[in-house]
Length: 200
Image 1 (cartoon, rainbow, N blue to C red):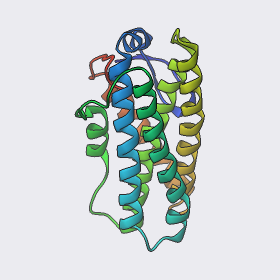
Image 2 (image 1 turned 30 degrees about the vertical axis):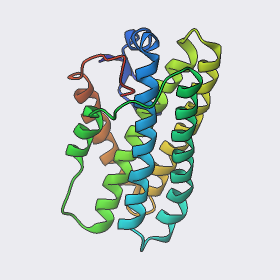
Image 3 (image 1 turned 45 degrees about the vertical axis):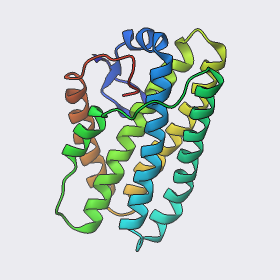
Image 4 (image 1 turned 180 degrees about the horizontal axis):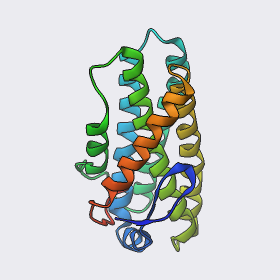
């Protein structure tokens, strides 16, 4: 799924360049998967707000992100319809499921919060990297601009989640744990098949 190379956003593995070529040939399925990724991002944000509502800064930071993710969901659905497609079925997201397995559970509530924030930051970082590739390499100029806008947004979310994590733990702990997340993700993605119908 990936090739070894240090990327921006702190990722250890760059996406295999073959993914863009495959994805462009399956743009209906990429857009469908992208739409569902945005829907899940909004839903998971709401879950975090509900679970950690005692923390005012969590509510303040994540609420506008939820609104933006839901707006993205609507935007991708609109793009599907413009291209004559309908929203297809939601597919299993093996990437996110494997990341969820790496979340440490059963610890102090603030440590648990930090774990979820780091998981979200990782998903946003990888999404941003994928959007950047699409914004550069797809042949359709409208889609290049479409994905450039998503890339900028996801980069902001990635930074917001990491900064928020540092509000509820020491910077040393967050940096150490983030390094563990990056190493885990780099090894994990090597096991995933290159698929043009998946955003991750």
